[in-house]
Image 1 (spheres, one colour):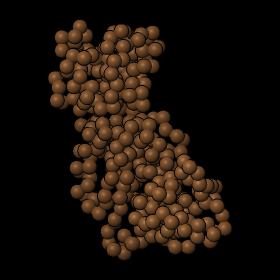
Image 2: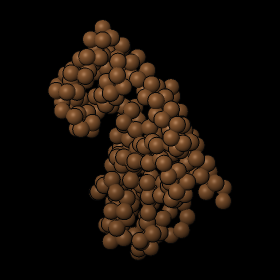
Image 3: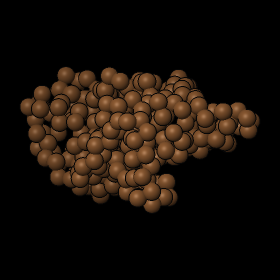
Image 4: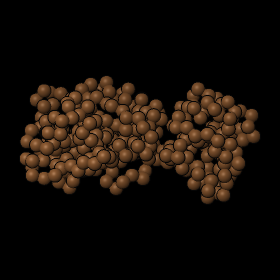
Length: 295
């Protein structure tokens, strides 16, 4: 069994297919197929079940996957120790909002102190961010609870939901805003996959009110720009960059006056073999954001 075969096997699983894995490894697909076939023949078990939708890992294949990751991590660690420096890429999945709000300052501080470690960000929707973590397409993911039970987390911050009020609107006054005030009001929201929109819909349903959703977009800056143009009331998290506008933002509450908010955390899969730098990264990020909250 060769290390290249294990690397090839992990790539096929992580890319859910031979074509994309071959592209990632810069090898031909037939060559990659032969490597996996040789591995299966050597072990005497079926590792992958092929289908039109990709590959499915068998029970034996899953056992090999965990072992292969441990072997390669050990080899990489040995190389790093003998060379006197770490060399690793940390892959983090998150939403664009999380990058702009929570990661930029942290990375500006962390990267210069870890020159031998590269960080690669995968920006995606909240749902896809979670899925990437569970599919092992990333080492860690910034997402809000609930997460699967096999996921460990460290807190980053508590995100509060706010209502952006156009200038001259009847609700343009300071103070918290209850969702009951939004009944039949034209509102602009992020997509259904965003926690902010889910909290709004749940609170409105409990209160028996129905805002008129006239626009949806994943980019909070787009919503803020339309609110500034007087199109309607925007409902966004306080993580969205709104510095380019002078909009009044009112804390949004349910019918009983409770603030709409949710927690955000850095997550990783428990039991998965991760490079030591990944663990350092997630703990440093949590500590960094905690210091910001306490300052």
